[in-house]
Length: 129
Image (cartoon, rainbow, N blue to C red; front, side):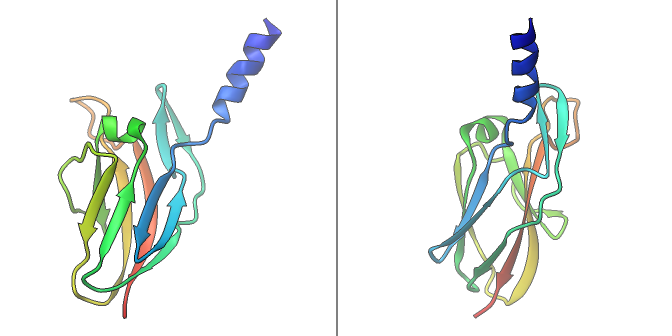
């Protein structure tokens, strides 16, 4: 019995899935700021990683299979940017402007009646020469 309780507590300490973003050979990754696992919402303080990218370049976003299976979408400065994506890799072409944007990868809601994302991974992308 004590072993089962110990395993249950250890399971709560599992890290959330990592999402990786790459541009121009530089990459950053982060754990989720919020993540729904087994019906429980995990919230963590996450300092969004900062990535430098060139105008007109590309962002390569990699998510684990567990996130791709749910589906995910991208949001830039609080505006949804994509439809639901189900691939573990997504390539986003950056606009040909200089700006700093808040990009968030959101895991899709878990059910048809749910409107709340089931995970979020925040990033800051500086687009400049």
